[in-house]
Amino acid sequence: DIQMTQSPSSLSASVGDEVTITCRASQNISTYLNWYQQKPGKAPQFLIYAASSLRGGVPSRFTGSGSGTDFTLTISGLQPEDFATFFCQQCYTTPLTFGGGTRVEIK
Amino acid sequence: QVQLVQSGAEVQKPGSSVKVSCKAAGGTFSTDTFSWLRQAPGQGLEWMGRIIPHLGLTRYTQKFQDRVTFTADTSTSTAYMELRSLRSEDTALYYCARHQTFQGGAAGMDVWGQGTMVIVS
Image 1 (cartoon, rainbow over the protein chains, first blue to last red):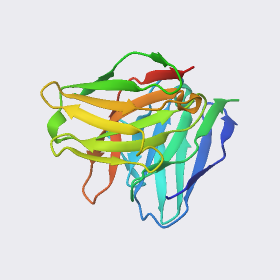
Image 2: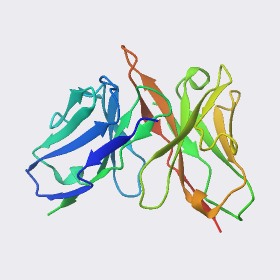
Image 3: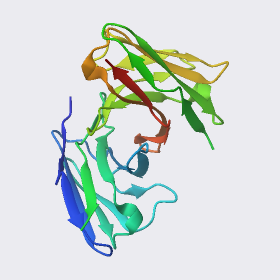
């Protein structure tokens, strides 16, 4: 199975800050990498596919990048509604696997 | 816009079984692919497998393949997940989710059910 490792596991930031979350795959997954946002008590929401493509309706302050084994999610100008947990997920092969999550908290 | 509505919370005893339903409203249920995932309290997401209703195809992760069965009723646009021989470690929020595929082969889960809490105690 492909292991997905996210860092950090949590971070504190203020509204307006830029934050970066890293996701590393245990083997080359090209750009078969998705990002999700999960707010407390809610199901995950699909943000980014193919490492860098924003789904419709996702604000442009979210940026995904990377290929191979190393990926990043950057949020530029953090908004109050962005405080949540973010997960990466590889869709290169089954079993589909997720990173452990990064919790973005208000400083 | 498709919505996935799951059945209500369950409390089950160790060794018993649970069957969770996921009804799709809208969309093209019979040709879509649906995954089942779970999330233990305070933990991350774990993919259990997927079903393609119109083909009757299922794929289970090795961890669950001996204890789980995915089925679907295309006449009611409902998918089901049955987990047997429950143990306390199976206490989790169980989700169904629909796959969205993109040019180039990328795929993600674009519509999720609200989750069904299963407590094994």
